[in-house]
Image 1 (cartoon, rainbow, N blue to C red):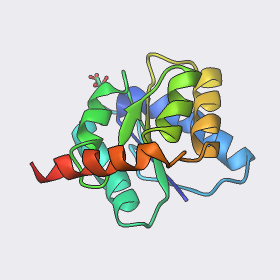
Image 2 (cartoon, rainbow, N blue to C red):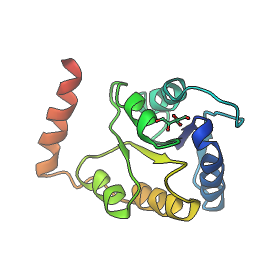
Image 3 (cartoon, rainbow, N blue to C red):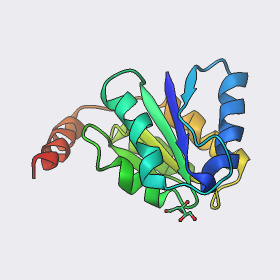
Length: 145
Ligand code: RB5
């Protein structure tokens, strides 16, 4: 189950991604925003990230204008490892090496075609484990600071 969320800057791209997931039969829950009216990205990150943190959803895709603000908000929530990606290599390696559980995209940065490719590789790439596992443990311990 994929959690989707955006502010107004990501509203259009979220619709494209929702269509893409629907076409592929990938289940998702859309946590909004549900209109192009202005809203605040920190608010929009909370529910989808909590759904990932509590196990109701497996991963989240969050979108704001740049992807940056909503990724900063997401990474403040315990258990979340969010990565902003606008290239294929990063979307792949943030799964392989960082075990990212939230993909953040910039609705004003990437077009829908590239965004869907990034979603595809993010959702289909497993965590590599091995030497990266200890680094993830160290990363998550930083939440205690
Ligand atoms: C909203 O105008 C914009 O600031 C927001 O979508 C995002 O890009 C922030 O990082």
